[in-house]
Every structure is written in C-alpha cells, then in structure tokens.
Amino acid sequence: MDNKVLRKLFLGFIQIHVLHHAKEEAIYGAWMLEELHEHGYDISAGTLYPILHNMEKDELLEKEDVKVGGKIRKYYRITSKGDAVLQEARAKAYELFKEIK
Ligand SMILES: [Zn+2]
Image (tube, rainbow, N blue to C red; front, side, top):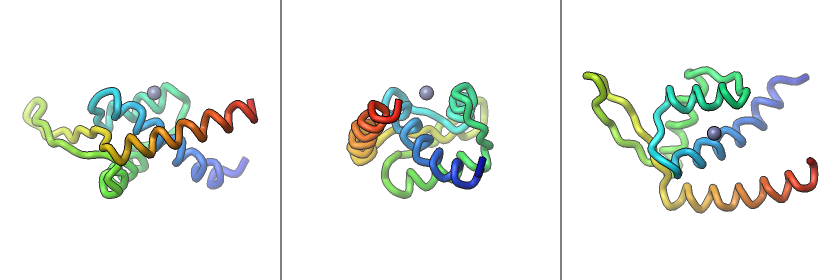
C-alpha cells in the first residue's frame, strides 16, 4: 500500500470532515484529532494543525482565540465560503459513494 498516495487522498476527506464538524459547532485541534482517530485516521497534531491553519488562510474556517484554563485555545468555525465548499463536496462524495460502494 502506498502511504503517500493514501495520505494525499485522505487530506481531502479530512478537510470535508473538519468542515462538517466546524459547521455543527466550533472545534479545536485536540478535539478534532481525537475525532479523526476514532474514525480510524492515523494523523498527528503536526499534520492536522497546519491543515486547520491553511483552511483558515483559504477562508474556509474562521478562528477565535478563547482563554481556557489560563491557556489560549484556537476555536474554528465554518465560514460561508467553507459552507459552500462543504455542500459541493458532500454532493460529490455522495455521488461517488453510490457508485463505488
Ligand atoms: Zn466526525
């Protein structure tokens, strides 16, 4: 199994997954990391955090710094652009799933 190829593919899945949860409620890195682990993704903080940062740069997510127990925690919510991308990605993923299931 070529891990590099799979990682590239999963990057897209992970971003859709992030958008889905950031739409339901504000998420933060450690929570999302655990969520992805529960879904069987072997991903590290060092991989996920730059993804979140890039999604913020691409204006798919907006960040809010919240002080939690004396520390700053970065919360992310979906933007209207992120929501449009999520809807498009969801439709495409569903269409593909129906075909390959
Ligand atoms: Zn999930």
